[in-house]
Image 1 (cartoon, rainbow, N blue to C red):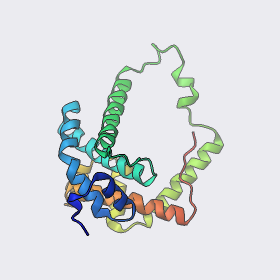
Image 2: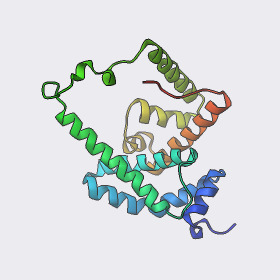
Image 3: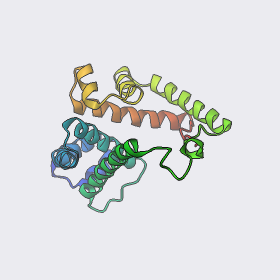
Image 4: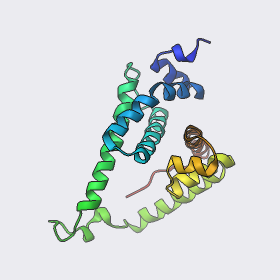
Length: 198
């Protein structure tokens, strides 16, 4: 097989979707410096940059597996847009945390359906989904289970996970990536729906 480093982005995406995980690692190597610099330029914090950088690649993996990438030779622009949107989401979240006040709002935030706990039915569905997710996590290999627990249940950054496990940040990212892929496969095999209701 031709050297992966000489292949186009779209060929690497196709190989990755066919099960070649090294193809995605090649894409990661190809764009990690540029993406890291782009995110850091916007947020000016190494810790925040590292988290958003890792989230970008996790989101890219999920979107690729869901068929949300059109092979048009614009992978670099596509993944940069994912990073950009995550930065915008962070800025919005920070602004909202600093600005929301019920006294200054024209609508009553405390009685808004958007912020309510939902109907009994939706609460029951969501409770079942969370149980199913916990069950899927238990079926993962131990190394993957541990990083998923730390990332999604303890809300630790990839840097914290790497330090805690004595591994590199890229290894932590890889384990989460494989874990998400495995959980999707197991859910599909067992016909488990993971859609939350609001």
